[in-house]
Image (cartoon, rainbow, N blue to C red; front, side):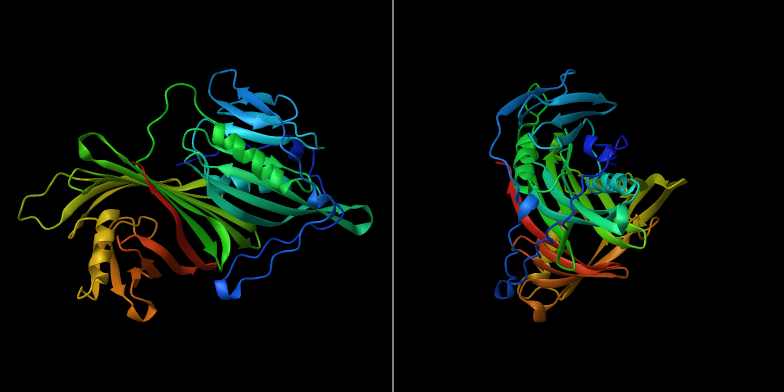
Length: 424
């Protein structure tokens, strides 16, 4: 599972948050239907309106030869080596430098952002009021998320000052990046500089093989951006395939404050498209809670019912190990797409049932996934039911789910496909 390797402590945050006396501008509302689009948010004024013209480009190379990059700065960034990461202090000519960490192993994107918010909350007199994702995009073949952390600082005389910490996290599998700037304004500058850094960050040497296909989904909770879902697929030797789906979700939480959920699902299929291995990893607030590896057993005799699977892993301190049989064989993503197409085709069945593995719900057995057409919701609409969870969905002509919505303990969670790109 993607883990945050060290306790984050940016130079500006360690010295104490940089508050301002006026409250930051309110987050821009999420767009609604085209016919009911909200009015544009008022332009920021005062310190919040500050921006910088493009700065000179500075070449960056880690002393250990781990990465190279290029970044806008008024002078060469200062690099500090840590275990598993390198910190860059990037001077912008403003009061606070822009601070970034380049990691050498994958990280949990949502958990990393929450760790920074908790570090801010840990300062005396500081209260984090909100943690708001503002945008998700793709930079250098990796998902990037921008987040605003709004906080208040108790000041003498019972007055309160407010501040906004700007964060950016890139979930690159090779060189993850986490950046922060704690100073009023410079929102567009922060986005431009960090995006430029992420776009040029690379490992020296021959280029790595790119994933065969990529797909990005945005996740929204009650219409507000909450995270992303990133899928990649690679061809392996012998005609097998490896797909990985990473989900990072920031939730408002309740009395204990914001929460983070990160999940990774890695699936390997053979040349015939059958599932041979599946790895599930779940983390909450940066802490690994479930890790399960599932493998298909040898093919059973022709007369034996179903397909046998073996699983092992950990759930907290509990060791997991066992076997079960699926009478239909566990469905792969491609099989789900084929079944969706079959259900939605003219004259197709009204519903279909597949076996899937959801260890967070049921560890020692497959679950039935029931797909049903819902013509009243549109020609390509259907519902997907797994146990007590039902999703409303809309599919494209290939059977891929373009949009889904389901009930979540904290609201209605929607997933929308915004980018898909097969590699030639």
